[in-house]
Amino acid sequence: MDDTAKLFIGGSRNPDDSLNKAEYLELKFGNRHGLVTGATGTGKTVSLQILAEGFSKAGVPVFAADIKGDLSGIAMKGEPKDFLLKRAEAIGLADYEFEQFPVIFWDLFGEKGHRVRTTIAEMGPLLLSRLMDASEPQEGVINIAFKIADEAGMPLLDLKDFTALLNYMAENANALSSQFGLISKTSVASIQRALLVLEQQGAEHFFGEPALKISDIMRTANNGYGQISVLAADKLMMNPRLYATFLLWLLSELFEELPEVGDPDKPKLVFFFDEAHLLFDDAPKVLIERVEQVVRLIRSKGVGVYFVTQNPLDVPESVLAQLGNRVQHALRAYTPREQKAVKTAADTFRPNPAFDCAEAITNLGTGEALVSTLEGKGAPSIVERTLVRPPASRIGAITDQERQAIIDKSPVLGVYDEDLDRESAFEMLAARAKQAADAAAAKEKKDDAEASAGSGWTLPGFGTDDDNRGAAKPRRSGYQRETVVEAAMKSVARTVATQVGRALVRGILGSLKR
Image (cartoon, rainbow, N blue to C red; front, top):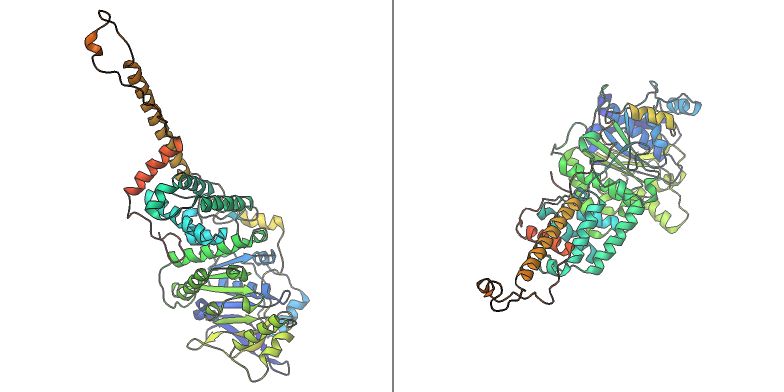
């Protein structure tokens, strides 16, 4: 096979520790997904780095989360060091050269990269419920909220929009329950409290406009290399659920927006999901089923998804079965769960008669891994004990000055760095409330004038009896003006009732189909 059609991973070793052969990942199977696992300090980040380098060099865009900051070094040219040159020699990498790769830095908080956002509407009810850890009744209320907003044409862009809509639902719970199903004020209050917690954790930075365009993480540099989008996730990891939900939303957007391409010669995009266990921890069954469905179907859209985690047990079996390319670093086997993880990892490989796979997993050195990739007609290769190649870019984090210099030359500079706040649900509800208040005030003024005109008295011979023949209209006792909120929400309810059938179409994970 032509070297340009495959990605060099490293050199496998014979039982006597001599070089066996070069191990490759064929680009035409790059969209068949993959798994990189291993205990802390065994070399997972470097494996992720060399895979990202290989895909980029082949012209494939890459998106990866940088949990510890170490992956940022891929933006800088590597430096010759003894251990790197020794590894290159050991695996027969004669043309080992150092180079830097085109990188776009992203950050939800806008501190270490370009701001990356989505809107409440684009995230959808399922993922928002997951983010808020909503109960079943609360999830039902969230679904109703999205239905009302979709049908009424009220954009839900940020947290204040969703909060305004929830206030409306609480004020009109009885009327709306008859139309959409039970809306408990208790559930609404719980959701409002959860929104407050999200806001305190920094989620308000994530929701808003301009929303991230998928095309901006699928760029190719002038030299033909695929752009590597690196998400700064060190601060984001302080809220693991937000991190997992964001990456799942991005995967959902890719699934909904990209066209079917079948089996391309190389992927359209490769997506690395680091700390993958956060996606599945405490996830409801319905979410796991839909993730499995997305992973299975997104392959035909040319997207490869690579999960990076410490333990293969972190990934459900239904998802694990979809991952064709495997890089397994060392695992420890001190506890029963760790022993089970070793056995699970060993059983997923096509056995090699030259060594015991389970035993080898516990004895692998740093930068060494068991590797099995798809070959031929898509069958997994025999597992090989492999020394992973050294990266061409820098190992370790870059400095703040280096990062800023790269950001200043970014192809998306200025596109996402300023917030936009166009008219949305919050402004629409406020405008309707004002309109309703003005109408109510005018009506009250008119009623007062009519009541005053009809309350005069006359004596025979005084005034014009003809003008006062009609009985004076008494002022209604017990009349109370409806509140501004009630008037506004009744107006919204009438609007909703007249726009049934205009609900926006949502995809497999609840995100908007554009």
